Image 1 (cartoon, helix red, strand yellow):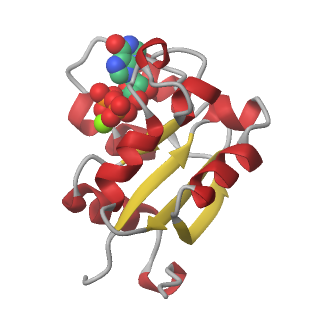
Image 2 (cartoon, rainbow, N blue to C red):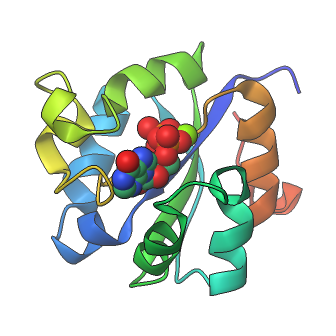
Length: 141
Ligand code: IDP
Ligand code: MG
């Protein structure tokens, strides 16, 4: 695919705390175009598969419980250098270490309940996007 994009999740804590609008505003103001989006509640099987890379970690069980604890917003974001720029916009995994003005500094509750997911590579951006969206759901420019 010629276009540059990343995949994001507004996590259950941020949805519960009423931050969907503010976060999407910050994301679009930062130059990302929303090219696919929907609100869903992940099943346990989906959450386990999505975070399979972390299944040996001590926090895996709690992370899955958290991700199925309420609805989330999943979206694809298009921008030059999307993956790296979005990781920068998210801030550090632990919001206490996140730069001021980043999504996690502004909206996260804790290391686990950290408001937002963003892909860590172009390959994972495509894998994660295809997990939730078909080609027909993607509104490329
Ligand atoms: P990332 O989301 O910044 O890429 P990862 O290391 O890929 O961070 O971890 C995935 C998710 O697992 C984090 O966003 C966070 O919700 C959760 N997590 C990561 N490390 C911990 C931890 O030490 N304790 C509890 N939850 C964690
Ligand atoms: Mg990660």
